[in-house]
Length: 351
Ligand SMILES: Cc1cc2nc3c(=O)[nH]c(=O)nc-3n(C[C@H](O)[C@H](O)[C@H](O)COP(=O)(O)O)c2cc1C
Image (cartoon, rainbow, N blue to C red; front, side, top):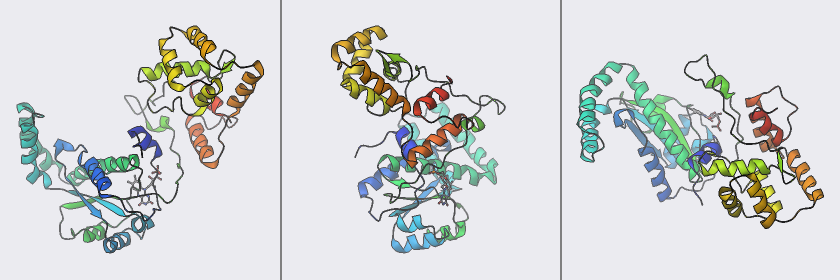
């Protein structure tokens, strides 16, 4: 299988409650461990202790510590992300020596870490737990996204009793171990729906909490704008230009959606269209290229295509759900919006 990009894995990841019993291959498990090991941490001190729970007996005990949530029983593996509060004392020397030896940290950085980190940790007091748990959560997020990118699913979990989890992993007598998170990982036996998110403008701000962040509309023409009598063509030309500058991150492009419908209608290969747009100084030159290379279309065919594209809306429950999430995000009062073309125009501030 093709590994998903980070953005695609973020978009696809859902908290999964039911897993198939299929085991995870050792090579895949190694890749997940590597992804967690690569997580950043405060002073690179890597305070996490990550236990891979996979025996049936331990899984049952862990599930019992987590209100018997099914995902722990069903998933082939559950990662317990623990944090060692005092690990900085024993690990700091080696962290510094390694970073210095490979040339990543110069004398200045080494003396900062050596001089500041011990006092910093001592002054943390009760917050030491919070700081080490923070680092472990980042490692868990690395692992969950890596799992998604490799075709696995996961479920972040807070629902467990800490002392019971510690007993399962043999840490019941260690006050320096805190549990950050449980993460069952395996092959999904369900397709969980996106539960929606609050409007970005309520959660993201610029400079201060009084100033909500506003998404800048992408510099794309409306899907309703026409060229050669065809809707979406000006927008597709804009997308090619933006994508070539790396300004369309995470955007479905050329082989899907309206783009694919239009290129299929014109009987033009995506790569050829892309090359033609990038070689053309303006829209007129793109149209001349299409007149020479694309399928000739009667006016009625163009009209039928235009009507079809502009009417496309969500076709199944999953897409309807996603559509509602997107609409809620932009303006929940605009309940008349039914097609993707309208949704795009609303999102980009045209209607
Ligand atoms: C820190 C954390 C703890 C969570 N604990 C549980 C849990 O104990 N059991 C569970 O079924 N889901 C748990 N979830 C999953 C959330 O319910 C889920 O992330 C949320 O509904 C959003 O859905 P999504 O992950 O599919 O986007 C937890 C998620 C996070 C981030």
